Length: 167
Image 1 (tube, rainbow, N blue to C red):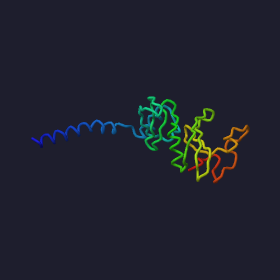
Image 2 (image 1 turned 90 degrees about the vertical axis):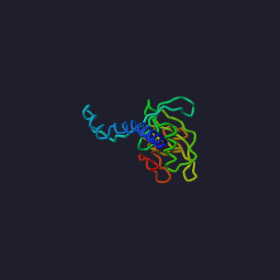
Image 3 (image 1 turned 45 degrees about the vertical axis):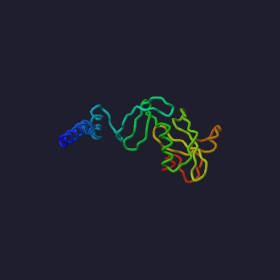
Image 4 (image 1 turned 180 degrees about the vertical axis):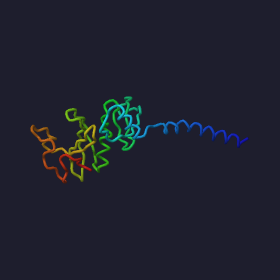
């Protein structure tokens, strides 16, 4: 009798896992997605990423829809496609910046501006809300001085002007 119950339980577990496995197999591959886009007239198709969607409660207690990049794990707002504030902070932490704070969204240049520490030095950085590109902000620009060139000033540590500053 016990053997029959164990067999029944194993069968139930196997059957409950079967739909999940079937769903995974039904996912389109990158080449299939590329073919579909070509068939619909698209060309010069770039990186095709696998995203997951989720409905979750954010830090303010609101229910939100998010996209999770299956390759990088970065989280985006499902409606705008913009990186979440938490994802922007994660990008900086992965590049070794510490004590990230005072995160503010800047609509004018679609970036998050925040303060952080790099090698013990306080700096101001921006993370582009869609590309995730990071750049250090000059002190003039951070203070809001007029005519402060965006990224034109030489930045300590050999950080480039147009490349991701912390890669």
